[in-house]
Image 1 (cartoon, rainbow, N blue to C red):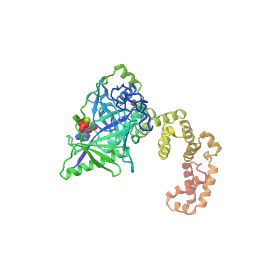
Image 2 (tube, rainbow, N blue to C red):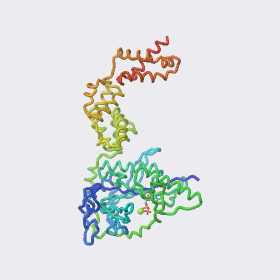
Image 3 (cartoon, helix red, strand yellow):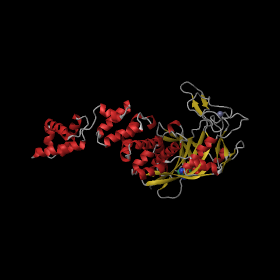
Image 4 (tube, rainbow, N blue to C red):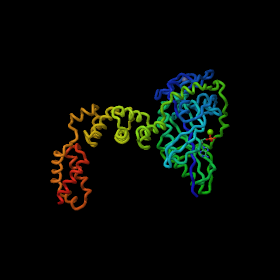
Length: 480
Ligand code: ADP
Ligand code: ZN
Ligand code: MG
């Protein structure tokens, strides 16, 4: 029997407000343990939480960008459980009246665009962090700097069908959060955390199988890996005549497997009830409208506009709009040289490969939009060859400067007059008798080598197409 997977994700996104959600403590990352704390986030008796409006604004903007319906009344609830990193003995979250419901995210899959429905978005506080002593240190510690940092939890419907789709969905979510500026959503820093629910069923079936939940997936790379492993494991269990137990499993990155953590707790174990310390969150329609107006152009729309206005391919538009900063860079380069196809090409190929190579983001790149625009213009206007353009990009990358001046100073201008090129072509023909012989005997591919020799002699300043034509002409004259 063939099986298919059913996947639903529960994603926590850390909102990047300056202060925590129910007190004025800083949310700064990396401070000494237990320095960003106060009686409220330490859970002292007698303290009262006060809601941070900025956190609500960010949560509403995120939910709007996920096409959700914002509920005009939502209710904070206590989720009770006992764990050392939770000083109050409960987490303030939202339960049966969440901030927002019924949204969706569009993702690109092999089979085209797919809609992943969002079940709900709710607001909650983060817990602290347990730190276990290493080596001979027998103690465990708790750092409460993170306790009370605002989070949203985004829950999808089980609409995801493959591990790859799950990865694409999370990437899209990160893109949207970054466009909004509500979170950096960096998985490696814990700003985006994902629990993955997965079950299998006979291919084509409409029923849902028993699911397991995988926790501790802490990088984009592992999302697909953990799911692939778990799907395979479930298939083996079923094929061996067993059945899947509903449980929570932990992803073990060093072994590349999922392991039983606990049999799934039931919702009633948490004894949810409305938090009597907090009023229901009432959002006036004017407030929601105002925040809606403040939303930036989101990736789907921007992509459509790039295709429409600039005539770019779906693929290029997708790549360019995958990061807001890349899309911004592209559009500011256009202001200096309005040639969308050429600029898009240089950004997606030359610029992005350099960013990947150095592992940096575009805002930290040592090149500005006007510099790239000038380089592309020099190439497009045949002042320099494409190959010299790449070299020029490397020079600007390393040393900065005005590309036009560098070209003049370093004598990089394309050799365009035929007579001086002819001299070089003749030289190469004379110096490479074996290759010329090969060419004349019908192995015409060897011309690539000869062109390469001309390029070398001219330090890349010759137009390769022109050189090829010239070589072909000269060689055919030799034949006769
Ligand atoms: P629970 O009550 O166990 O928390 P929910 O209905 O709240 O389950 O769903 C939690 C997550 O699990 C959601 O993302 C949902 O899409 C996903 N999910 C629910 N049922 C299944 C299933 N049978 N297989 C895979 N994912 C599922
Ligand atoms: Zn505090
Ligand atoms: Mg649930």
